[in-house]
Length: 244
Image (tube, rainbow, N blue to C red; front, top):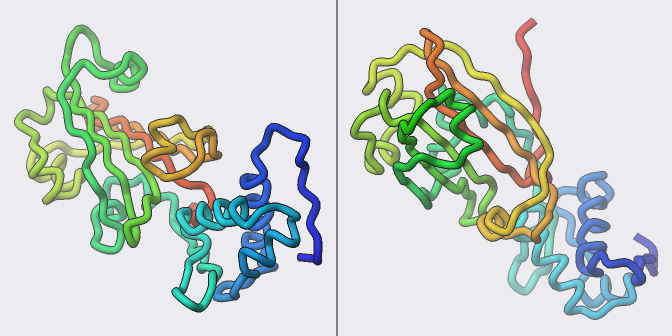
């Protein structure tokens, strides 16, 4: 980064967001290496020709997203961007959402008729009720992703919060309810954060996010589960491993 960096002060895009994206590009491109200390907020303010308050907000959001971390009395440093397997994030057969390194917080568990857009995905007719489960995946108390899961009530009678907290969803389906899984279909897309998602993930409204949608079917073809995973798209590099 040179002595001065030009940003567009005549656009509706906030200055802090332009600075944030500029700093993010330095991290993702490798110009700023893992463990490297970035310039101070005063130095960045001089380079961008803005106030330190504006720079502070940009840096704070990158800290919240897990791209930078602060060391008291030392400065702000770049965090390693770890690779994560997309298959582990969406499969039912692992502990990616339940392990102690990536705990989740259950923020909603209800039984209702759910949103109209969910019912067709579960292939439900009539007034059959649905379990609605919302969870936030965290690391070091920083939110990384949101999971919205919907299950028809009839195959899973008496499902409780305690069961969800103490067992993997896969184990509940196959062991507790004795249902044999068939296959799952997964969709990937990019979305803009809604107010609800922005608040849960601590990102600006409209921030680019990665959405994974999964529909899981039993061996007999019944749709057992529909889930959406909303992830911060800069948290990691994601990969998909394919057997050849």
